[in-house]
Image 1 (cartoon, each protein chain N blue to C red):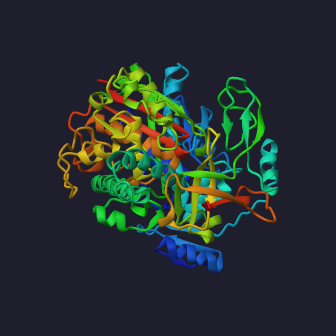
Image 2 (cartoon, chains in turn purple, yellow):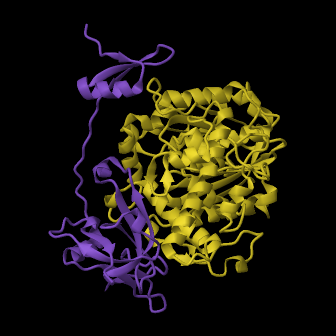
Image 3 (cartoon, each protein chain N blue to C red):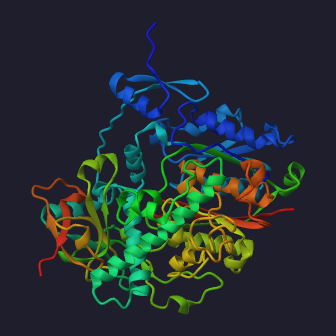
Length: 175
Length: 443
């Protein structure tokens, strides 16, 4: 009877799965475990629901946040939400400036499998004049030695839009 | 708490599925207590983080099943990285409410069933999938964003306040921050050399930590925990049964839980909630928590300390097992838990206070033993099978307080002498939820 090939190293098991779809792992005590390749993919029907206007605005090269309608609150969210997290009232859409400053940043040299091929990439939390919270975005056209907290940056927009948060990114602001 | 058990944490346990791992930890826990048989257990709380890892939904039912616990009551607990800590508190609540006399808390994760970078993707799906994940969802990146700001607030605006050139000042501050974070990594890996359950015990130098691969600036590979397979269990019961089962039961004297926004970008810039030994004037100009600190950890600490009657954690705790998924978050957590003030975490590390006395770290640690943090080696060295991690901390803390480290580790080096009271701290995604539980001698 055919039997999958057996290996002592789990790494070798993974390599064998890619080749033949099955393998046996043999541990130090000689216990054998049958291991199979088991791929899985899903197509989601993802609705942005109440966040939709933000993504539609990106397609028009506009950055919008949300402002609380509470008369004493008026909290401005740079990452929008349709109800205020401070006082609970509904918010209204408000334009954000195209320019901001880096509140914090990093360069990712590794990432999730979905983004590994894009490494290295920069992430920045951006602060805006007139907003009380931040926006997380990719930061392009700059490398580690150039970046610092407080650095002025400006928005760029994807053309054509893909209706994702990556439709906006930031670059160092032109003086 | 009357007993606990842990499997060795490993990169992969292909010969054990999650049911068998939990069973091994459970058998270990029950073995030492003849009166504690399965029929004495009223029900269970079972934790694992992600259905994605094993692609088996309702897996907790299969654990319940495998342990032969049906038809007793059970529920699955999930709360991100804090899953294990929440499970511990859920079992506490089952007993404290009077619903159960004896409750088993069991947790596990089998992260080896997917490749490491796919595993990172699953973890990153615990960030906002509209605004955060599609940017390059990667938790190390999120914690890097937090520590860059932490370094800015406390080193750039502290020790390097007088450097005129902004970029130069920040470059110096980050280099100093990286160096001090490496001390944490050296400490935890070194401690773990005496813990047979740990996944990555090793002797490291600061230079070796700094020279390891850059994962997400400024965090290097040796400053970050890894994926693991593992399980842990704890048995909690009411006071009279605790005395029946054990002559050294450990009392859960306080529980606390705090939360914060899922998105880092939404964290407010407000006031610091104070521990009893702090003053508002300590933080007059500190926008809080921003992205530099974990407000949830502070809230959890305040609640747990109040319940346990702790007025100053610096003197009222003998040790802490905290959630060091990143060396940076260990330093941030010193401050959240009031072991030092906000801004003093780096100096606190260099003082040696969180190191163990009597271990050669290759570092000058004059105050070693003042308040040992992660004597077990923490997540960085023990591994982080998410649903088991918070329970693992509970088990290690339990053994510390019983004075039983040598019995369970086969090596008494990590035993803290006369450890009467300790804290365990479990933490989820960028501090979106955190639990703190206080364990103390109950005899």
